[in-house]
Structures are given as structure tokens and as C-alpha cells.
Image (tube, rainbow, N blue to C red):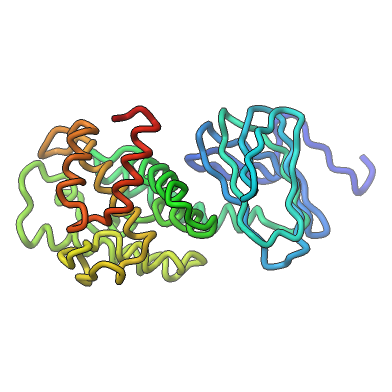
Length: 302
């Protein structure tokens, strides 16, 4: 074979990165550019953000499936054979997969290693935490989904919604330091054991503070704070709590209540909503609770 020619037989790749929402394969690279094959599961929200270099171009050609692109002005449904690309991007843009989607993804600057190393390490840690806690299967994904839908309902900026998505994925990382017998105890926790549980938000904040995602640290630390100051770890009140943390707190509480735990059965969606309403403006931000209720009604959950 001539020098400079690289052949990939069907299914081959240079590197492969698999995560819960799909996978990304690096097919070719050179002179800083990368060609990738990206597969994304149905009903996932993906956010494209401006790069450090405004000259970055990212091109997406749809090989399979259907997605809805939201460019902050309008929404466009794109299917097999359609494409879109970003260049001189100044604001966040997002798309939602309506079915499983396969994309041919071309970037004029290296992005694969950033996506695979930075995110994968934290995602793996998050899934390790889920495996530690027998009763929280797919909890982080549901909190992420609810968080993004609440953010959209409140018409937050694309940047804030992206931040909510990542913070939701990593909000329970600190539980890696909580002993398994405490996480899965079938009886009521002692004060000492509950004290360990309460440290997880601060531990999680510390873990992400040492990574590219250090901007998530405050959100993760605050996601168990309450409007009336009765939360932890810092007893913050009202506007002292970031809106992103308030949203994750409500999404987290709703999913926890509607999930079976070792010490109780799951509540029905309506019973969980009634509980949120009971503590609305005490533990939970009223606007966030109302937004979640709208989401649940639109999804025909209540």
C-alpha cells in the first residue's frame, strides 16, 4: 500500500470511547483534524459549545436516525442524509435525538481525546457509584434528563442547561467515599451514618474541582441545600443557592422518592409531587417545582 493511504475495513477504528448515552469512534486524523463516527441513543440531549478557537468547524452528517436541532431561534428536524455544521459559533446550540442516531462527525481541531479522557474518567466513576448503591440504577441519567427538561422549561441559557446536564451526571460522585454497608443499610441510619452520607456533596465537589469541570464544583456541593437553610453542607438559603443546584436538588428528590429503596417502597409520581408541593418554598424552590410538574404533565407521567 502507498505511503499516506490509510484503509479502515468495516467496523475498524483508531480509538473507541463508549459511554451510557452512546459511543464515539475515531476513524481518521491528521494535521489537527479528526473524522469520527458518533452513535447516540434515542432521547438524548447533546450540546455543542463554542471552542476556545472561534475558527473551529465541526461538521455532522446524519447516517441514520432523526434529531431535532435547536439553534436558539428555531427548531429543525433532520433525518438521514441531512447535515449541519458549526463555524464561528458564539453561543451554545443543542440537539435532541428522536431515535438512535449515527453521525459522521468531522472536526478541524482535535476533540476526541478531550471527550474520551476527561469525561470518561468521571462518567466511569459515576457508574461505579451507582453500582455501589443497589437501589439507584440509572438514577444519574434520570436526574440529568429531568434537570435538562426543567432548565428548558425555565428558559435558562444553553450554557446553564449544559452545565446542569454535566453536574447531574456527577452530582453523586462523593458517594464513592461512603461505605457500602451504609449506602445499602436496610434499616434507619444512625446519626453518625447519616453524617457520612451528608459529606458526599462536599466530597463530590472536591473530586470535580481537580478536573476540567471545576465549574461544576459549587453546584455539586449545593445540590442538597434547602431554601429555608436546613440543607447541607453549608446551610445556605434562598438566593445563596445556585439555580443549577436548586434544579438538580428537585430532580434528585423526585427521582429518589419514585425509586424503591432498601427501607421503603417507591412513591407514585403523584404522591412524590404532593410531597414536593408540601415542602415548596421551604426545602424546594417554588419555580423549579412548578417547572417539574409541567414537565411531568407533558410527559403524561401525572
